[in-house]
Amino acid sequence: MRRALLPFLAICLSVASGVEPIALGSRRELFVDKLLIDQMEGATLRLHHPESAGVAVKFDQPWEGRFSAYITVIHNDESKKYQMYYRGNAGFKDGTSGEVTCYAESADGRTWVKPKLGLHEVNGSKDNNVMLANLAPYTHNFAPFIDKRPGVPKEQRYKALAGLGGKHGGLSAFVSADGLHWQKMQENAVITKGAFDSQNVSFWSEAEQCYVAYFRVFTGGGVDEKTWKPKGVRWVSRATSKDFLTWTEAVQMTCDQPLVDHIYISQTNPYFNAPHLYISTAARYMPGKAVLDDAAKKELAADTKAYPALIKDCSEAVLMTSRAGTTAYNRSFMEGFVRPGQDMHNWTSRSNYPACGVVSTGPAEMSFYVERSYGQSAAWLERQTLRVDGFASLHADYAEAAMITKPFTFTGKALHLNLSTGAAGSVAVEILNAAGKPLPGFTLADCQAVSYDSLDRVIGWKAGSDVSALAGKPVRLRWVLRDADVFSFRFE
Image 1 (cartoon, rainbow, N blue to C red):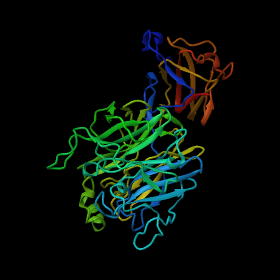
Image 2: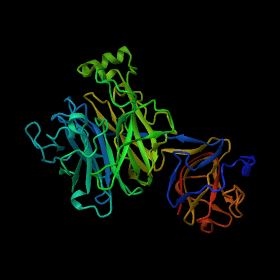
Image 3: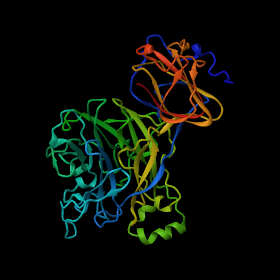
Image 4: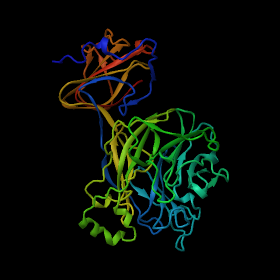
């Protein structure tokens, strides 16, 4: 028997006269922030940690090396091919000709091969997967994407930003027809204000109808030129462009949490299943936090003796989100998303940095990739998996819980859920008007509660699942759940 949840509903709801309902349309919404949430009783937003799927790539070639980094993973919708780009660096100074850009590909995003491209001679041979060479400083952090802008010329189908600041000028724009042969769009840098010595990501935003770039800054305005210590913390700015050449002034991103973390790379990209939502599998860098004991340091010493700074810091992956057209990050989840784990080799400086790109690798699976053992001779890339839409969920323990949304409008005929319950669990949905009054035929008593695990389950009531009579009208959803997770929903 259900207990009374959220009493005095109509009195407590945070709705004011004249407030416009959120125009949801038919887009998919994930429970990664509280944009749609008005009230919760017993329910929480829960972060879900990915599972390791093992080795994706070993950086074991002489031109790759222990400092291979700044990885981008792309799924080409036309060729169905997965493409990977990353820096090869066996120990050369940043921004010098010793750095190269390497390429790998996969038919499924799981098993990767390094094709012999024959483009550049390295160590006396062209039998390698080097895509760019002798192109410093751009090989330090070359970060491509497939341009999905309607009408984009074939010769500019792939685009990239790369470069360093200071004497190097900033970020330059590159284009390619095939993702392997590249040329600059113009000689001068296109973005000049920022701290660019990390991975700077960009993409065509379907939701915003412009190009968007995210790159690193320091909240205190750079570094101290005497000590080279940062002023403030490493953080993120954003700029936009209509043509990938002329960019707006950079705007520093705001955040719903205090800016106390060093975010080394943001890896902000549209989520493939909901492109209005930008997912950041970011790297949290902990400078000066040395955790290895003497035994671990001794074991690592032989491999890392030339790079003593590796044992002075640690890092991990965190999850941030943003929405198209905004300059704000949401950090509902401050805890680690991918922790260093039990392997001491991952408790070193700059290990556990995620690659840019979350991709679908199966009907129910999505993958992203995390660097492991950075700076060490056995550096490698790990594949991590989650269920589709499974970054976070609206969660209830065994005790019944509830959540009520803010008013919104939708288009569509049926409410689809991505959910998982225990055998004793369930999810029910009641549709309310904007004032919080249950609508006849869509009450909690009418709802056919779901107990199941499904990526796409249609919710129904006694009269069926058709909600088209409510389309375009301001409504709320009241979720009542027990021993359950709801990952996403949409009206179709």
